[in-house]
Figure (cartoon, rainbow, N blue to C red):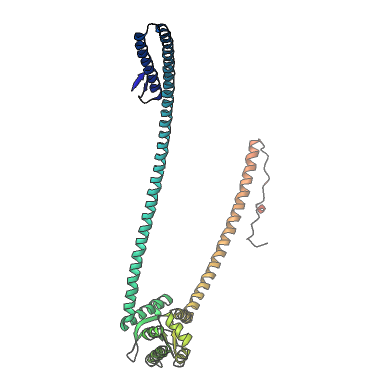
Length: 388
């Protein structure tokens, strides 16, 4: 490294190599001149001239080197200023980039945190939904277990029937698990007035036959399942007709409650002869929907019967109401008379007040003339409202 002023140059710099070459050439020429001086004295003058010329050249080179060093120093200073400005600009730009990157990273982190929070909430919602689905799956399996057993299936139909009847009728108009005179126990007995009289609702659920019908994959299985469903429904109709239609005790008919809309729709769509057989046996097949409609009709019948039972009490209450209205009218007339008398008294008080005022005004004016006696007949009684 070579330092010229404040500028530092490397050995392989072109300027340093050029200056070094010139100096080496001058040294070689000086040595040649000294050797030639020893060979011939006759050639001393030209050599001296040549040396003088070379000295001038060296001086010129020295001056050029000084100018070159100054230029290099100026260039070095300009480059240092430019580098300083460039460094400041780069530092400023770097600070701006860092600030923007910090803001961007902060915003990204905030959005990421918000997204993670929303994702966590959705995952919690999914977990709750999954738990509900698992619970529902367990409930469905439990329902299948219930329906697979005849006793539990019967209890399921009875509970559904009780819920429907309880919502449609007053609590004192039906009896669940009522025992009849023949010892048979009905799922529900509706206490209707005569006619038609108490009517029985019995719950039946031919699920096995219906499921076999649904699972049938060919015509032979379909015919067999249909035969089984007909047999089961006919047996239920006959049992209800024999057990729960008692002359003089129950109505001349009964209801068979199917706790499944699908089974009810299947019977009416594909087995209308079973429905007609039920009509013939005076056993009407109802589903949860049609049972509610039937019970609403029964409620209207019960309401009408109770109104007829209470007709005497209603007439008695109306008679008492009429007496109360007459008594109220007489008391209003008495109050009207009191108001008329009060109005008459107020008019007389007003006349006396006017007379006293006139006397006081004459006394104030020193007018002692005898006042003319005023006739008491000036008082005109008020008439009652509505008279004259």
